[in-house]
Amino acid sequence: MKKRILTGDRPTGRMHLGHFVGSLQNRVNLQDEYDQFVMIADVQALTDNFDNPEKVRNNVRELVLDYLSVGIDPNKTTIFIQSLIPEIAELTVFYLNLVTLDRVLRNPTVKEEIKQKGFEKSLPAGFAMYPVSQAADITFLNANLVPVGEDQLPMIEQTREIVRKFNSLYGEVFVEPEALIGDIKRLPGIDGNSKMGKSLGNAIYLSDTENDLKKKVMSMYTDPKRIHPTDPGEVIGNPVFVYHDAFNSDKNEVNDLKERYKKGTVGDVEVKEKLFTALNNFLMPIRERREDLSKDTERLDQILIEGTKKTKLLAEETMKKVRKVMKIDYF
Image 1 (cartoon, rainbow, N blue to C red):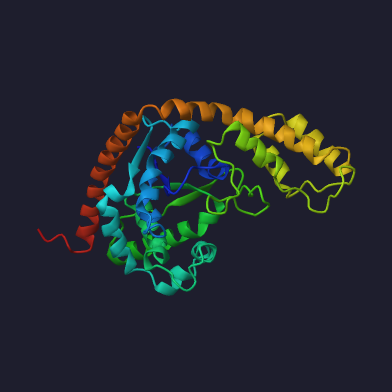
Image 2 (image 1 turned 90 degrees about the vertical axis):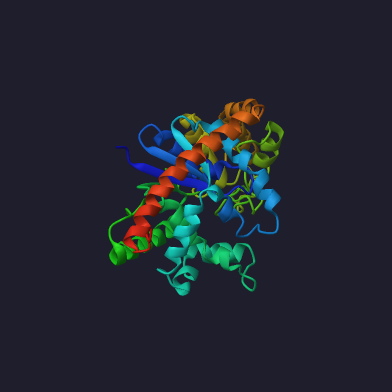
């Protein structure tokens, strides 16, 4: 049998290039080799959007469009909605007994996101506990591999801890999942921030128009110490060159730009214009597929209905095993 992949995204907005290098690219590449499941994590999204459920609901189809437009094939990858699998919530409740509050709040990813969202004095319990919910998301299907961005590694490690605790207490039910990081560990924001994020307003989206893309690229942060085009510039860590390395298929052009930039014989404008061309060539087919797919909403819904139905059956099988080893299979 094929090993299983579980991954997913919160439906809080369109997906960006950071998502592509962080996990989408791996999902496309691995869907022939693995039994792959992709979860639309609407329950997780509600932990910090509980007062705006319309935002979450309206972005479910947007995620499906992004998935299909980059090459995720619903005939090879099962796409499902988290809230329609109540077994995940049941498993989360059981897992909550296996982890301390202190351990959850020490999770580096949780600490960083609490800070980003300004939750220091008004932290919703559901948001604080989402590493436990995520552990249930991953393990209810007994996933072997989880394609994630580098910032999510602490979440996978916490999942592994919970699995070890469960198995040691009740018996071997779950496998310890492994994380899979993309070739590019993290794509910086166009503002120079170390992370690209929907909430940070510094992202290039897979669905950006050509005009929007041009504006974003030409406004990108570069080497702040470089005042004139004739000044020698820094290439390492420079967001414009990070993007060139990731998306410009003309490696000779990239190498030439780097050498000239370090010598001070090329300006930021030329470097950015060539990056725009490379990114537009990359995004154009994705943009066109997305537009075509958006016309068939019935197909999008059917993909979700069929994927969720298949996932629900597997979830029921897992929870039968869980209830048995926990001695709560009463009838």
